Amino acid sequence: MLTLSSISKSFPGVKALDQVHLDVRAGEIHALVGENGAGKSTLTKTIAGVYQPDEGQIEYDGEIVHWTSPGEAKSAGIHVIYQEFVLFPHLSVAENIFLGHERRGAFGLIDYPQTDRDARELLQRLGVEIDPNDRVSELTVADQQMVEIAKALVHKVKLLILDEPTAVISGHEVELLFKRLRALKEDGVAIIYISHRLEEIFEICDRVTVMKDGHYVDSKNVADIDRDQLISLMVGRDMSELFPPRVGEAKFGDVVLRTNNLSVNGRVTNASIELRAGEITALAGMVGAGRTELALGIFGGLPMSSGSVEIDGETFTEMKPALAIKKGLGLVTEDRKGQGLAMQLDVAANITASDLDAVAKYGLINTIRELQIARDEIREYQIACRGPRNPVATMSGGNQQKVIVARWARTCSKVLILDEPTRGVDVGAKVEIYRIMRELAAKGIAILMISSELPEVVGMSDRVIVMREGVVTGELSKDQLSEEAIMQLATRHEAA
Image 1: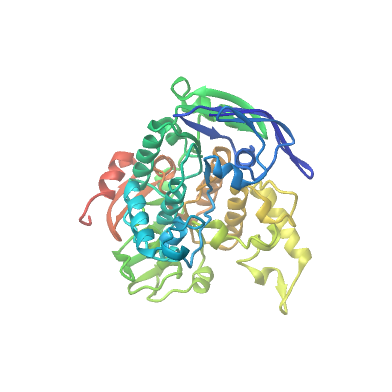
Image 2: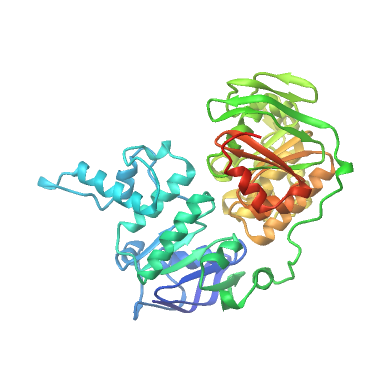
């Protein structure tokens, strides 16, 4: 279906692709993997007509092609679902799905009843319950992802490219996605699947191509390679030990934060948890379990409807982010680009954003002090960038995440909440983030980690608290940890 031969692409000062090869067959799911900066996104955009290659040849569906625009590639049956959604938040679900391909009736007017019926049929095929009349801005991130997939299914798809499709979904949503992809595969659709979740590669993909630093590394049948071999190809070194070792339980300190029957606007009900100094506690559960809402309730991002938060023995029945920061809490949000980073600012400004008192006087920024702090944090957290004035928008996902962690590590002395800390980052960056988490815990900070990746939960946690539908259903010590035990609690109806 698709053959790329010796594809090269350069941008000012950077050679993003250098003699890259790739072949994808009709009726197969082909994984494309590599660390951030490996060139996957550039290659994807070259296939989709966003970029034109400087060298090399693209053969698609038996013909040599030279796309001059994404529209040409799309008309030929190539569809890309990017990690960053391309949706209009103030339009309805149905309007987004058929944008540019509206259902029209007499006199060329939009036929809204037909649009609604067709949208419902597409969403039912995906197995999701979304009202086509809902505004996209009102949807969860997981449902927005499903709308993106529905958009692609409007057209006759020959080659479907998915960039981190499960970064914002988990559990049942992933199962539904995989079921749909397998059905497309049986229909002869070629699928390029980009993911940092290696377990998904082995579950759904037929072959895998590895890229590194803009170069082609190798292609393998998934059945002929194991996880350790794949990681070694990706990072160029042995990664047999993904998670740093735990500290002994005796080194955990006192309880630094406790919630007492905390409820958050119907999303969390009577949650009582404890966090201890130096301990990494995971908050696990399916999408919609209320984990993020509980974290936001603790930090003050969402108002408590009842209950309280106790920090170092001091009880609060109302919390605001400014007060949480003052009391030594930090929050790394799930959506680093939308909520965590000021994307138009540089590394220095982002690192010092939560502690402006350290760099400002009389309302003016001391740029010398700001740069000094940024340089120290860049060195401390091994952030790959051109320096403190590097715009964060140009950095890889893993390094963007380290900027946010560096920011909060400077100011939080008690508790650091990490919501999906390794979402959308490569294996090498994950290892660095795991190391940083262990080092912060070793300094006595209580870590509350929200993660949808069960291997990550089991590998990093000293203790796991499980939620379902806004209720805490149980707790597991490190001796009890297993993916099966977590899933049992995550699907329980009654609280422990």
